[in-house]
Image (cartoon, rainbow, N blue to C red):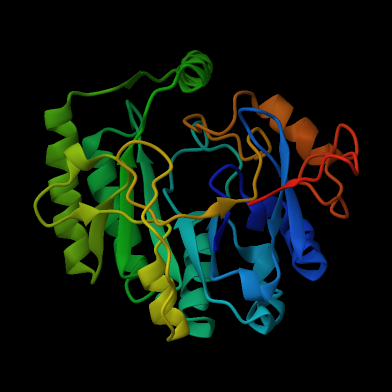
Length: 305
């Protein structure tokens, strides 16, 4: 089983202590985001094939690489570095710091460990296509040698994203748009060419319509990459999380509405205020990321995942 930690929140940045305690305990309790039913994810080494971390700041776990290595399973880091203006990403670490962390992961863990995410590509008057071309090129140059893949997707404007973008646009005086598919495909083609110049392959996450010439379809949970890191085969079926997703099957141990970064386009947070409240209420000794509403009854054992 591959464990995803987590596309629902930033566990390395905000919940590293909890994650390490869960490894020691050998399990985590996770709430199904649709049914609210709790289930148990087995985190004992013989049940885990590898980990995929999703983050904008791996710093808290970088100080515990020895514990991650001692667990004896490979891991990759889907590392988002976009360098957008603070009015769009108010609380992420500076790009320079994130880039340094990625180089350290490539050096100290494995060259295939970090994967760069320039994700999502958001079109605003502050970040028009020419911004993305220049910004992506600068980041790719600084990340050369630290990543062999650059993952993009174009912002999907959910109702919560629209609300957050509209409020911030009024507050900061910018406008945003969702351009036509031709504009996205054109930009993807240009980004693919830039990535190639810096030793990377551009891939597109869950949006096959925008896989331009020279790009490929992203597999963010990638058993093949984990196997190359470990030197041993890892078997996992292809089982995407949404339409267009090409990932291998995994079990995610995160919770929605728990990431306090406050990025305007985030699909995993409805209100930053709620995420901050949940983060402050978090107990790193709890078996679940959020406090349990009630302890599971002995007569109704938790579902194994």
